[in-house]
Image (cartoon, rainbow, N blue to C red; front, side):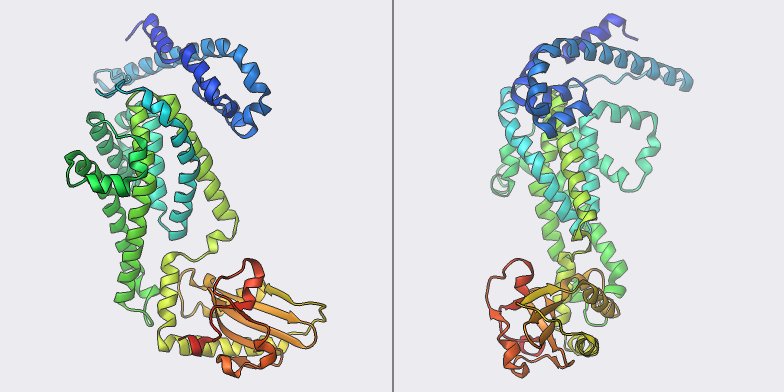
Amino acid sequence: MDSNVDFEEKAHQKITYVKAYLAWLFGGWMGMHRFYLGKWFSGGVYMVSFGFFFMGWGIDFFLIPFMVKKQREKLAEKLRVQAEWAKKIAEASGDEAIVFEEKLAPWAGKSDWKSYLEFPFRLMFFFFAPMLFTYIALAQGNWELILVMAVILIATSFIYSVQRIIHFHPEIEKIPLLSDALSTFKKLHAYYMENKPRNFLFYVGYFVFGFLSMPFSKKTREEFSLYKSIIFGIFALLILETVLSYNSVYPPYLNVQEALGVLLAEFFLLFFMIISFMMPMVTTSFSLSLSGKHNMLRFLTFIGIGFSILLAVFAYTKGDLSESASMADTMNFEARMKNKDFRTDITTSSEMFLSYYGQKSKIKQVASVNIHVDESMTELYRRNLEGFVAGNETALVHVFVIEQPGEHLVFGIRYNNRILFLVDHSGEVYKNWRRVPQVIQDMFEEKILMPLGDEKYRCVVKKGLITDLY
């Protein structure tokens, strides 16, 4: 085992005054220097408060020497404990002690200044891309993508800690999905150890630069094959999910052709997400890790996972997004609407529902037009459809109310930008536009672009109901 002096020297090489002050100068207002010096909580506070309202940023100029000294002591002690722990494990198992030390890639140090020039672009990308990536993945039900991306980013940021854990606890690699993510991580690590990732903007514009260079560059083809295995691995899960859920989702109104159409659309979306979002994040992660810029990488990882992904998950679960329809739900419902038997069934069910609630409703005396979605009726109507639609397809339909001065009260059922049914206060249900009384027709306005908010329920892209539109 190394001596104390060795550990202190490694700590001094790892934590330097120059890097601390550079981090303070260029990113101190967001706590970058505090992240660099291991102060993650206060760094997070600085990030959301602009360096504690810039006052903490200024004061830290004088505190950095003390923070550097303290962090060096903590790092030296950590290295010493890790070495002693590895030795004890080895003595207990009879194996040779393994101390994992930082191993940089052969290309590390070359064109080092580029990583600092690219950092603002990477920071902006890690702020917004993981949030959008997570939202799309959750909306489509492809949460496996989030797990793969998070595992790769965390494993790369703490690469040597992860290697130690896997070495002494190999059972971790047997956990479903996690084992696949770790296997992908190992392949990417081996490749990028030998081949330096290209510049960040190349991966952001991969749909142009990557695919144009692929016929002429063996390196580009080899790199893409690693991500291709991720794409087809998750695509295989989509196929399995489709096969297992086929009977409960598609028959009797939809068939194998519709299922294949949805599967193909999801595949192209999946392909876009991995190339446009995952590839720039993963290549950045390996580029910084294998060149020894661990603190810069951990800061970006903290932004991407600890801020963007968690914020997206929180917004998705707390808002109405978790009940929204996915691309598959939208495609399936549209395919059902083109099926004559389905239209017959939904018309019969909707007529009974609307007629009952139309007669039951009471006309309110209003001074001006009032348009709103009736949440309670929408919930009841969606339950009414659960017998012959699947998943979150019911999230596509809403029951809306238009209250007009006088005795004009209109209920309607809207699907996306189309109104399927209308009913007046007498319980008369209309499914053909020509039969709708003129006084009700006058309530609606034909527009191609839908306004935002409840006002959109008064607009139609075409004057027609279910029998006119299909």
